[in-house]
Image (cartoon, rainbow, N blue to C red):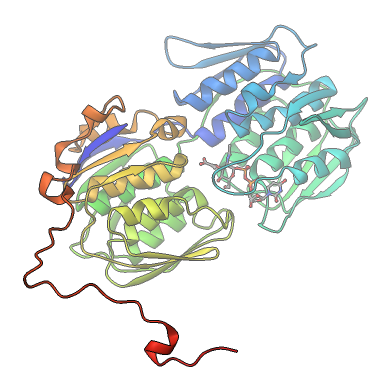
Length: 463
Ligand code: EPU
């Protein structure tokens, strides 16, 4: 768990790591390559370790080199099983489905199961792969997919909540080998999908329209391994910008792509936060007072659902009433009750939360439910008065590379400690006096309330 001493403005310079959500599908796509793929900028995260285990179980060598690059090559193309024991740890493991089917013609991938951020079906992934000719059945919790030769098709991948990011990745990775032309409409436009597409194109694929909702893919017979550098993590970058704004600090955030953060930067500026952009750097300065704002999480280029929780933490100390809506994951609000333990004034209404800003949060003991909720709680703790404890920070480790060390370098005070009763800070424990039952002074205390029957209270009786 983390013990955080809040109320310290973050000042200095931090650098953003490579994007988790680009690295994962790109590592999975190395399944389709001949030779050894070398990936730079893959962050050192628990999710990356989990996917490496999945890929090894699928007959790949996966090595982290001394320079930090990850090298991937295939040693056994017969293996096609992504087991439940690995997939249940990380749902992004489903990214191996498209590459396996495209390259090996066969895949048996466990369905990932439940998720704390809401219902996450993969029906659109399966619809797209079936359209390419795959025979797919679900049996005993596994997706069994098989095909002799994939054939290009026109595929619509839109769903009730917009496009699908990993669904587009899966269908794209299979379609690169399909005979003829595939079009994908309502394709996801997220930078992570574009990064995967650029990687596949560098290997010899023919994908056009990346970054737009209409992809055109001409199938090829073979793809050859290349070196590739993963894009910077726009969610980590946004988390850092919000951290500076929340703590009243000034941060220089290096290694970001401003265009990937247009919605986030615009929202922060509307709240009064000052942001200067220079190439791949943003300098963010907190204002004296943050202004309330209504924001909606949408597919790219909208504000990402992956920063909805962090924005909620920020808006909880902005002056006025804010409304936060999540149109991508309408149930992703597990952070709210925990933020309320820190004093935030938030009411959930369906896919929205309504926030009445307060001046300062107060440190408390809170529990992280998922990756981005844990980031939101960390931000809240950094800005809060007093000490906070954040439990279950293993969620944070899944998606942020040593975030507490990065924050500590710019003035935060975050200690990672073993979760034991004795490591609970004294400041969060109730005093002996606060733990005492109420003292009853019989001489001048009013008599206890008497419960009256309806007749005694004069209320009409219902027949
Ligand atoms: N959806 C369907 N059917 C499908 C697929 C998705 O109805 O077959 C719905 C989902 O339930 C959701 C919406 O479509 O309501 C978008 O889901 P999407 O498929 O785009 O999400 P994902 O690919 O499973 C990726 C990221 C998530 C991020 C979402 C949205 C990875 C590994 N994961 O998930 O990242 O929130 O896109 O941008 O890329 C995170 O990093 O914390 C995280 C959860």
